Each structure stands twice: as structure tokens, then as C-alpha cells.
Length: 218
Image (cartoon, rainbow, N blue to C red; front, side):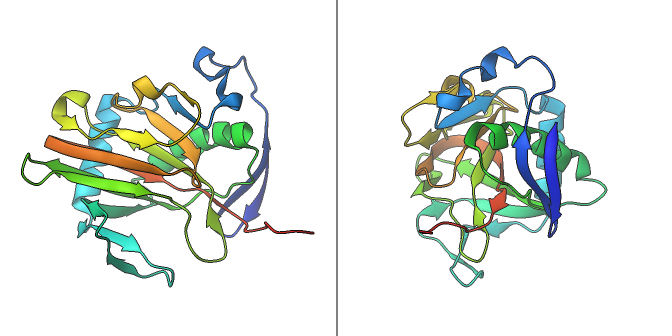
């Protein structure tokens, strides 16, 4: 069952209990910093998401500044577009929110789903590989990004390089993160990177649930 209340544009998930036996690949996620769920999207669904992402306005290597505006980011060599939730994309967000329930249970965070995701394009060449250097995903503003859900949309045969790397103690299923349709989840305070793509093109989807900034001493 899911315990939730309406918060802003999303749902604040305060608790989750699996309604059926836990899948084998999730039995040990509670002791992990990061975990990967394979086959979260089927190959034809990944291709549809790629089509949707490419149909939107594609921006070149832009990051988010503290005032919420886009800016050039020298540590990022890639392109991206933002995909919003609407009738044609609602199925993607429903799938992401089903994954989010696992993350809420594993990390114990109160989470509010986002109504948009980032579609990222890494085009590689040996002279000018594209990448995203080591960084954190914590965002500025009132609410904070709590969890990153990164879905690999491309077949691993479509590119060379381009591995997701996370500085963490234990990553359950890291060897499957490059499979098409695999979703990797980790807290946004973990430093991570997308290593250079040396040839071909890698497409990914990144979704950031947020939560209240309620830290500090009481």
C-alpha cells in the first residue's frame, strides 16, 4: 500500500509496503547506496521515449544555476531536452512513479514526483567525446532533489563508453545499468558522472523526485 497526500503538483509518498513477494533482484537493496532495476522499460518503449525527446527543443550542454536559470556548464558536453507530463507522455511518468515507490521504501525519503524529466543525448567521436563530469544532483530552491532515477534508453551496442559511474560503497546490479531500459536509482547527494561516449550515441532519461528541505538541528 502507498501512504500519500497531495503536495503541489505531485504526491508526497510517506510510506510504502510491497503488496506481493519482493522480486529477487530487490531483496538486498536496503543495504545499498544505489541499485539498478533491469527491464524497467521495454526496448520499443525506449525507442518511443527517444522519439519524444528528440521532438522537443534540444539544448546544448546547459545546467541549472542557483537562481533557477539555465547556464552553460563547462563540465558537461552533451545535449538535452525537457519532457513534460501530458496525455502522450503520461504512461512514462506512471512507470517512473512505480519505480519511485521502491526508492521511497529503500531510502525512507518523503518524495514528491516531478512532472518533467530530462532527456539527455551523448554523441561520441574519438576527437570530441561527449560526457558529464563528476557532479551532484542536489538542486537549489525550496524543495530539494532527493533521488535520481537514470534510465538507459539506448542499446549498449549503439555506443562505446558512456558508463554511469557513482561514488558509493555498494551498488546492487551495477553490471546491468548499461542494458537498454534499465533504471538506476541513487540519492542525489552521491557524486556521479557519465563517462565519455567515444562513438555512437547514448540516450538517457533522468527523473528527479523532490522533497522538503527539512534538515537542521531541532
